[in-house]
Length: 356
Image 1 (tube, rainbow, N blue to C red):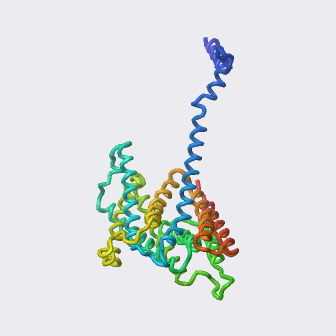
Image 2 (cartoon, rainbow, N blue to C red; image 1 turned 180 degrees about the vertical axis):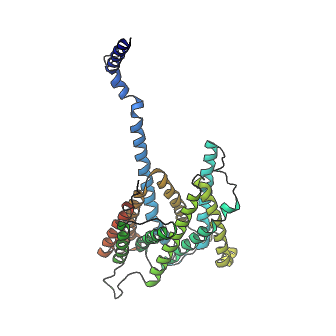
Image 3 (tube, rainbow, N blue to C red; image 1 turned 90 degrees about the vertical axis):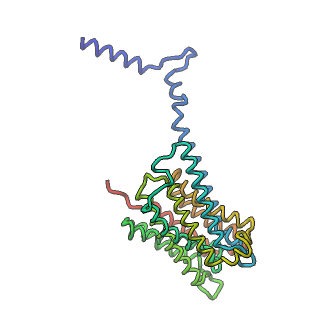
């Protein structure tokens, strides 16, 4: 009996491995291989590539146009609008976008413990620190253009990679590889090279005030970013839009205080939106969407996308500034941009490998 059972099983296996022909002479096994079920993986791959491409293009355009729109919004070398109201508007728009994203989540998944807006005091009390840091950094972003142009700003903005890396090591106790430390040195060299001014008595195009503001902005951005990541990772199951909502709420409150301290009389006499132009509105939309694009990169793409976007954005900003603002695209700036791009790439690929 056992011998017969084995023979029957072998006969069944032999039949199952043969190509069974359909009435029109085609192999059904081949047909199955090319059926829609067989192309699911390919469709997913195409969709993933499409999402990455869209996110990469969006982040590159938003990053490269950010500094250009700020400079372009000035009239006769100064801002006709209140920068504090513009900053408040950015936070309000980001808050609205977070609410819209939450509304979609509630419709599809329902209201759960992780995506409800109601929360405890202990959870909310950690958001004022990064909110006030981002507020100061974003306000400095407007004033730094008194000392630097748009391409120089894109170069110097990469200094926040150094501050973020060092603060990661100090606060979150994350190790940096030798390649990443070397990338930091290259980044400093690239920023300095891009600012060389051979046609002037001054060695660097950017004055010391611009450098100091860039360093302060890098420190503020780095500390706020590391602190925010620590908050998010403290409760990873919490919906990111809820966390963003509370961060932006405090951002609005602190910017409201800044308006009262700095521009209260001007806002009361001339109005909240006095001096706003179409370019100003585009700038506010750009700042708000940039944060959304970064979160989409984390969801649909990877860190290397940010690297390529940053590198391309530096060159795009320089090229557009040539036509809009008469920027002189020197060899020093081009070489410095290349060194910065290489350092950003090395920092991305040089992450320490986790021991299994």
